[in-house]
Length: 397
Ligand SMILES: *Cc1c(COP(=O)(O)O)cnc(C)c1O
Image (cartoon, rainbow, N blue to C red; front, top):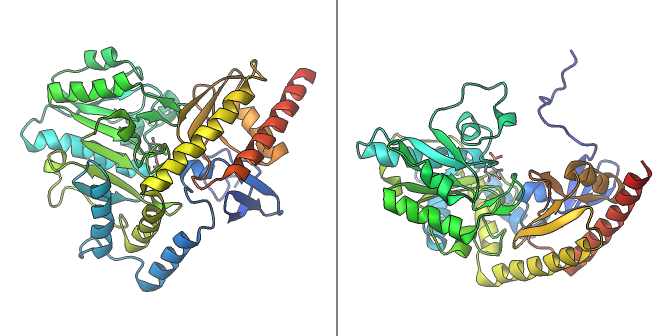
């Protein structure tokens, strides 16, 4: 047998972390890495947050898991907090982002079908979107590399160019159920939808009686400096998928919806064995304690602005390598003029800095939300040294 015990679907690098200390990861051989990837926008509070650890430890010793057949005081409490903090009236808890999007897709279809509109099942989604790796969520993305080998796709998705309102409008037809969009594309390259685009989708949804679903799995939970990114667009969705940062590292996602949008999600229509178990909710409660307040969110915005200003100043030194900085809050992207993957690998292997490559020639900068100026300094030092050594390496090859 040549196959590895871990199914070889990930191109895993040589970094093998065994421990986390705040904003650093420590590997088997004791090397310290500055973690500006955060498990891809997951570890909002860094790696060894006492409040989060304490909440998980206490809950683990009290009650880890019960079936959703029983009443859930923990679920009601966290759901009520999310309802109070957002547009939503009701919440379904999942274990992952893909499941949260899956629930959002079902909720949008059920909204129409519950009212007898069985024809309305199609969602308009956007080029270079990422919604997860289940069959429905890969079908919701136009990315062929995710489809290959898994055909046929689930029917019911049409793709329009991202940030192109007229193209989205042109796809509306008798089968359209709604729009599914990341307000800020993550895997697609930290591309924020323009105000006109996001507001325009809301207006089109209202005009045609469609559901507007925001996939905030990556951009949600304080990442952009507001609790959810949609707040910065001045519109609300009907349905929202959230995950990644929500458990601060503990697997948890949620589908949020208005009462109207959720009208089809009645007894027996959906479920999850683990979804929203007490252990996951204890983690979410601890994350919300820290991030869901004006003071913390203002700090994220201010820290993001400082990091962004440093990056913008820095990239001017290397106009052949970097094009621009984009994103919101602490969800930042460096759009590059060269392939970001080998550059990200160089920063990791030679300068012990972790970032993540994304689509559209972009390097993602997704630090824990609890970084301070010392981490920004360390990041800029490593990035600066790494860029200089990479430029020298490229020049000599
Ligand atoms: C990561 C991500 C998902 C999928 O989340 P998983 O937890 O990996 O299933 C869905 N949508 C967006 C925008 C994401 O960034």
